[in-house]
Amino acid sequence: MKGNEFVGFLPENIRWSLDGQIIYFDWNPNHELGNSTYAYRINEKGATPKKVDRIEAIEFDPSQSQFSQQYSSIDGALVVIDRKTSAVTPLYYTNEEVYNVQRTNSEHIVAFQQGNNLFLYNGLNGSISQITNFQSGNAKNEQRDSTFLMKEEQFLFEYIRDKNERTEWSNEQGKSRFSLPEPIYFGKEVLENLQINKSGKYVTVRFSTYPKERDTEVEHHISEDGNAYTTPARAKVGAEEPSHRLGIFSTERDSIYFVDFSILSDIRKKPTYLNDTTPYSSDRKIVMHSLKFSSYRNQAVCDIRSYDNKDRWIVLINLETGKFIEIDHQYDEAWIGGPGISGWNTEEGTLDWIINDLGICFQSEINGFSQLYLYTFRTKAITPITRGKNWEVHNVTFSKGHGKLFITANKTHPGNRDFYIYSFATNELTPVLTKDGAHEVFISPDEKTLAVRYSSKNEPWELFSAPNTINSTLTQITHSTTEEFSRYKWREPAVIDFKGSDGTDVYARVYEPEKEKAIRRL
Image (cartoon, rainbow, N blue to C red; front, side):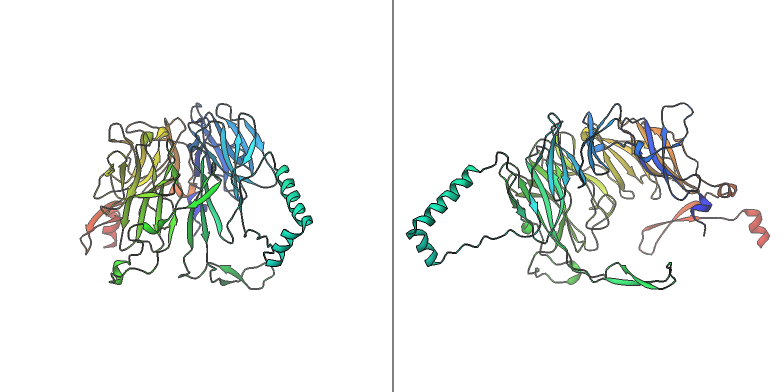
């Protein structure tokens, strides 16, 4: 099996430049040891893909599309990038890596993580301040002698009283002009998903406890010295599930409080297959996904999954109080999952606010196929955005301002991946790319051009571009297949469907022999 050596190394990891003029992708047309970064200029006449230095590829971050400058972490440093010139200016770098860069509502206030804590960079004056003080381990307890004898000594001996008073006075005089937040110790837990809300007033954090897994080892027989040795492998199945807590830190109050998820509906309910209506004696293990913050209120929506894969809750959290309301509860006696929902309980699904934070958009398999739904705060009702009994939504990207959805779905055929635009203003689903085959679409910063990885039944993945308009046409950018692959006359099979024993439609490809050869064999 030659694999890519026979087919060719196909383009992957598609992304846009900051100014939207260049499509970057990873490619290996010359069969080198590995992929390199290539660039294609969309508005250059006669343009062809050119290999570029990885450092030159300044990529567009869709989460910062509304800002005139883009802040990023590059090689562990905090940098600011000019949207027009792509000039990179380093702002802060030390021997400890900077990562997890987040934007607030303010153009000039940027949050970043270093170690276990979040910091704020002020673009107006260049100042950096630490806004959390999470520390591993436990607080040191100062042991004071509270025995009757020590209390008597403090009362009777003037020297001891004076010494204590001087100490208190010195502590008062030695107060720092600049103070850090009070330390918050998280013991042996793991600190995860450190996020700041849009107002910059609240930081959310997930504290996790992971049980020790039972390690396994496999024998490794290929080594430089010719000897066999064991190497670590994945843990055995059936390991104990981790525990999580969701904390909310108020930067103004310098305090942390935790969300109580014990009131989630059916949190102690046993699955149907057990045929036992008595509840569990304790809450089932759950995992909280990343929070999606409102731009206008101190609120966030969160997707919560049970570790037994039976339940999914979507909740609206009040960051000021830590209280929440349940927007949607989904139960599946088999397995919660599907496109846009995720196939595993720790994976993120489709969930975000729509234009002006009037509601939230999410996916659900409530009708058997994964479709998009809208929850509006005014009506407190859930309504379907897309409807289909024989197709489903596979991927969703929110437009700038969240007034539109860019949707990949298999509406024309279960095996296809078509591209559509949905408008909340008109409630219309507009087809853009519906050619038979699969489209992986990456949208330019101005949302006018598409970079598309396309493949059909007899054509491997190649890179194309297309205008983001109704019934658009693809323009090919790459040609990756080898001469040996291209010489063969690859057939385009017929796709048939038939009913399975359960009445469900089953699809299959049929490769029919050429008529002359079939007769010759007879």
